[in-house]
Image (cartoon, rainbow over all chains, first blue to last red; front, top):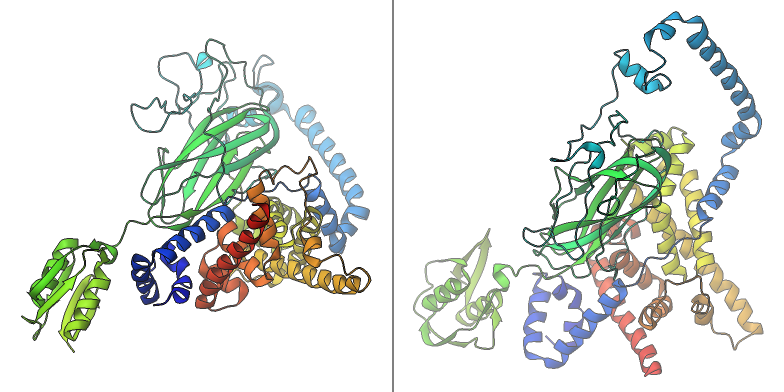
Length: 413
Length: 191
């Protein structure tokens, strides 16, 4: 293979392709220092491209899009322009009638709950007291050893990892603040969904501190649950080697007060470690607070991986979903074919040479009739991928290679 | 529980505008970023993003869900950007008659470093990459953005661009080589 042809296979080589072109290109790269250096430059260009940061859209873009959609949606515009006020008035009148019936004409309400009941004016809790089916709810686990109201939510030390003995504090299940007597019910209720996608090339933000509560010694103020807006962002790991645990950051900011649950759903080839059945965090989120959750992940293969993140809160509006794309996982563990051999054979029977090569990389070979003691002299001391070396030897001996699954069958041509 | 993308699409196709708004809210940063990398400036990218969603809204009923919504949306935004570049080129050609000293490439990727609010391009290297990307042929630029920045797979890109898989792979390699060449020109100038 010449240098120009080798350049055409750079991407295949970087991605560990086993195509014949990629295998030959690797052989060429072993021998051509110029191309090897050129490939390093090519790889750096790809890394530079992937390091381009995510650009923040203009603040008014969403409203611009919404206005533009209003204009192309005649039915919708007509509804908004002419019928919406009518419908609103009708709804208001209906609400008044229902309220009149519920609080004045319906005697059940007046006797059911005492005025001192904390649930007296809370429709949801009234429903619970009356025995109606509450919505599905997460059951928070109290943090062991401390009264519910004094529990200090999760806080991890800066630079702490997820493994044992590295300063990591596992996030506890946070109970609702004392005295509120409320079980959080997570949902979206037609939530305002705002998601910020991943910066595909990776980010350079340092791993920070995840603090979901006040400082040590301070008793957190009771959470005043309020609807609002929440944003999710994901900062992928800077280095993304395959098979090695790496840590990304999930950044949550919001203008709301709620108990939230953050769960992750990794897609094929990616595994997230340290989550409780996909739930990465349960606990309080306070207005203006920035939560940084480390996401430890391991990729099983090179390329792009996807990670679905969902945030659910116990008040309307606090919900968001994000599909994070994490491209650029590299350095897939060398498949058997690519394992380098450095053997030298001088006047060695071909069958013995093939068996030694296979043994050196743990490959399985079957020698068929006619593959025998033909003497070969081959020098692979420079380091040659197993499959390429096998091909060279077989070509020299007029053998044919047939691959069945993971087994190489060697025949006489 | 929040609605899944599929639920929202079904509801939006049934005429629920609120569901479509939620799809927009989820996807617009990604669409804007793609448009920005293709077109090279914020204002054009914002216009392209808006046009893409309008086009998607109009043709939502034709979306058969044989591909993902994101893939479908990317195809739309790519086409919108391509149309805008063509229009820009036609406009530039007519302008060139009057102002030949102003090359097209300079208009395509304006230097935004002087604007304090645009802090994304915070390094010389990123500026170099961004400008080099803007000088590539559209077909190269698109495949680089889709693969290296947006993270689509070869199969998804092949579907979006209606190209054979092998063509996508070879085009990506050529695009990366072309990008390096363009970057080297700039780096030589800087050096």
